[in-house]
Amino acid sequence: MDKNERLNELQSMFDKIEEKLQKDSIIGDLLESHRKLKDLATEAKVLSEAANNKIKALNPKIIDELKKLGIEKTEKEGYSYSIKKRYNVKKENEETYFNWLKENGHGGMIKEVMSVHAKTTESFFSKDYEGDLPEFVNRWEDLSRIKQSNNKSK
Image (cartoon, rainbow, N blue to C red; front, side):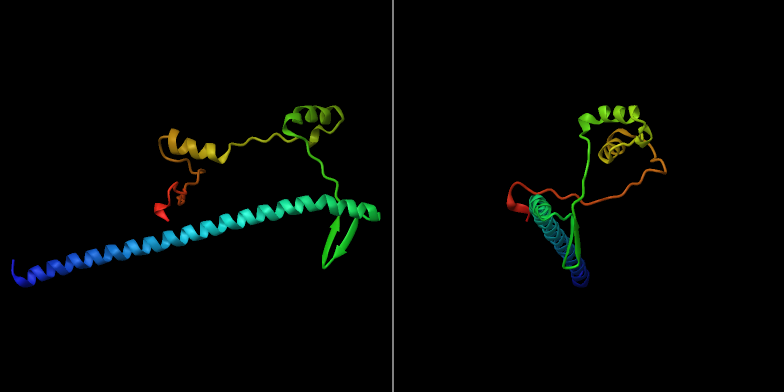
């Protein structure tokens, strides 16, 4: 192999190494951006949950004060506040509730709902199903992020 061929070969090797380093750097930058955004989203979720918990704790106090004043609705700084009565039935009492509705002429309120949880569908098609996906099943790829127990991968 002459000198020019060897130089061309070395240049080609150098170009490949440089290209790999650039790709590694780009992937590293993308993963770092992904980590930072996920951390920011987690922080925002924690702050949102904390704020919502404080709001939930404040609501009964506001309701008590409004009742003391004998009012059910007020406005402040462009917002309308009112006392609303809310109702629900615990899951364990649903059958009793449904029977009560039927016995009292309100059975038409009951809707039979059939569903399959998304994680069950995902597990079924990723592990238990062989063959082509039916056309009504959507498939996409997402990036999974798992926090490492040690701080090596930050």
